[in-house]
Amino acid sequence: MRLLRRLWPRTLFGQLLLIMISGTLLIQLMSSSIWFDVRFAQVFEAPVRLIAARSAPLIAQADCHVGQLQVPPRYHLRCAESLPKAQRDDRRGRHRIELLLHQALAYELGHDQPARLLKVQLTDELGQPIVWRSLFGLRTAQAHLQFAVPMDDGHWLLIDGEELQGWSGESAWVLISDYLLRVYALRIVAVLLVCLVAVRLCLRPLRRLADAARGLGRNLEQPALPLEGPEEVRQAAQAFNAMQQRLIAMVNDKAYFLAAVSHDLRTPLTRMRLRLERLEDGEHKERLRQNIVQMDAMIGQVLDYLRAGEQQNLQEVDLDRLVARLCADLASAEEPLPIQGEVGKVKVDALLMQRCLQNLLVNALRYGKAVSLRLEADAAQVRIHVEDRGPGIVEGLLDTVTDPFVRGEGSRNQASGGYGLGLSIAQRIAASHGGELRLSNRDGGGLEATVVLPR
Image (cartoon, rainbow, N blue to C red):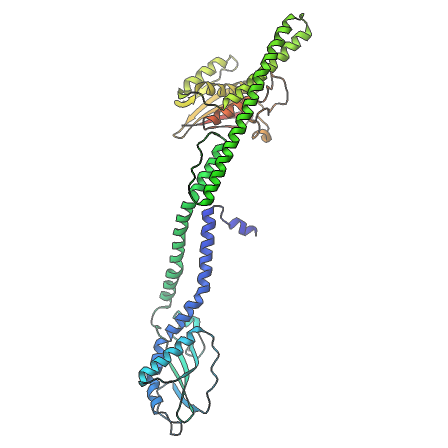
């Protein structure tokens, strides 16, 4: 079973092709019995006509009360008082041979001549049946025919005759290769072409549906799927479009709620600041001031996270200058923030992209050292690598650390750990530009954060 699972194709095209080819071969093998019956009768056509032609004079002169007649070689005649029992043979080809014998005898004698076919077989030179092999011409075979003709005196004239098999001069391998080529190979090629056409027609809307499902996580506002293809695919596309609209509504409601709550919280915070100024200086006043600052910073990050998914002003931006300016603002004597490579201009939102890279640089400066940037570009993508030498991130958290409020550092201290929204905002900004944020631990320690943007 495991071997079958490994051999089973994973693509719909492979599965459909395997099913159709296997079914075609199975059906062909089952229908080969029909071909065998027809071929069996065709092989006997020439011998039956020869036997009928040579037996016709014997039948016309035969008299069971007169001496023996002169018969050709490999022919035997005898009289019987009753009709012998015929050899049991359920092949349909036998009936065709019997009809052919009646027609040939009628043609040779000039009148309808009843005849009962008793035995028909193909034998080799030793008299052994070689039906299947002889049909393909692997050995020269002889057609052995035994039939009985009623006489006027009530006796039966039994005639045994042997003639060479028809079509025996053709090469065995020519017959086999011709049969395999025309019956199997051409059918398999035809099935392959049919599968290609069917899969292309049927899978195109399914592939479009799969691409739309993958892109939904990056851009919830992507265009709706066209309702094309078979009825089932149209229903799936319609359901997908309805799901997309429900998701947009849910996200908008959630974003509106969070934005409203975060905005409204600043009003009581402002009142708290004003009341705090009336208090006398002391330890409690300073602690309250720090709490208010932290709450205001958290509200600001939540609002930044909500705004990060919205593209506001896409334009051609020189990323090299943007990165250089950002590094100049954040660099220090201990961390000069060197830059390698160039990428040129890319269509982005300058403010959002600056915020994305700033979050990554601040995160790297907070936890690591020897921070540097490396810029790469090709015809399809732009990659901005922010590298540091620090503790990195636990492997189990690499896939979830970009989720909101998930942090790789366990402290709730803003100075060391923040609120778990920095990487989330960077990821959200990259996704809003059709790109992504990739995180990986470096060999020798440290983290590499890569912003991938489409050209």
